[in-house]
Structures are given as C-alpha cells and as structure tokens.
Amino acid sequence: MKRRALLIRLGKFLVVGGLGTLVNTGILVILYHQLHLALVVASALATELAIGHNYLWNDRWTFVQRGLSLSRFAKFNLVSLGGQCVTVATLWILVQHAGLHYVVANLIAIGLAVAWNFSVNLRWTWRPR
Image: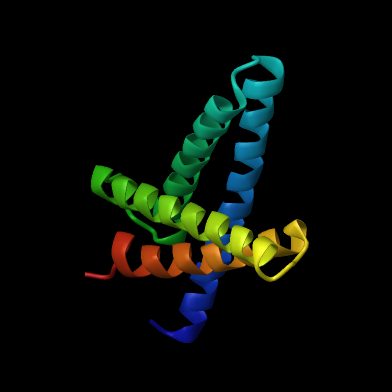
C-alpha cells in the first residue's frame, strides 16, 4: 500500500477510534450512573457497543467495504480484545516496574494498542485480496 494511502487510512482509523471513545464513555455514564448497572457490566456493554460502532465506521469509511461481514466483525472483536490486553499489560508493567505515573503509562499503552489494532486489522480483518 502506498504511503499516502496508508496515512489517510490511519487518520480515518484514529478518527473512528476517537469517536468510539466518546461512544464508550457516554454509554458507560448512562449504564452505570443513570441506570445503576454494576460497573463491570456497564463497562463490558459500553465497550462492546463501542467496538460495534468502530467496526461499522471502519468497515464502511476507513476500509470502504460494501457489505457487512460477520467474519470481519468477529476478527475485529478479537483484535480489539488483543488491543485491550496490550493496554492493560503495558500499563501494569510501566507503573509497577518502570515507576511511571499511571496516566503517562496509560497514554503509552494506548499508543501501543492503537499500533497493534491498526496493523493487525489492516493485515487480517481487512486484508487486501
């Protein structure tokens, strides 16, 4: 893939991820604060709805697919789970072993997870035919 096209696709992926963060946070507030669901349940539901949101936008806008695919959605979910593992593990290692402040460590962890999510989704979920 040409560098310019790859950068445009990455930019779109980042915009979708930013919007997904807003979706996740908004749904979490509604489910936890207003509907009083347990925090873990509210977070899991908010995360899955944000993943669905991100999949739809990435499928249509970032990777320009015409038809929805349950297979691509399942792959995207698995990649997102991997990204969450990258985030949590990196955060823990940087705080516990490198002594970084948790906010700084979290930002680094998110950066690594974004790199993981984009590269794996590019090569696996939406791999060129």
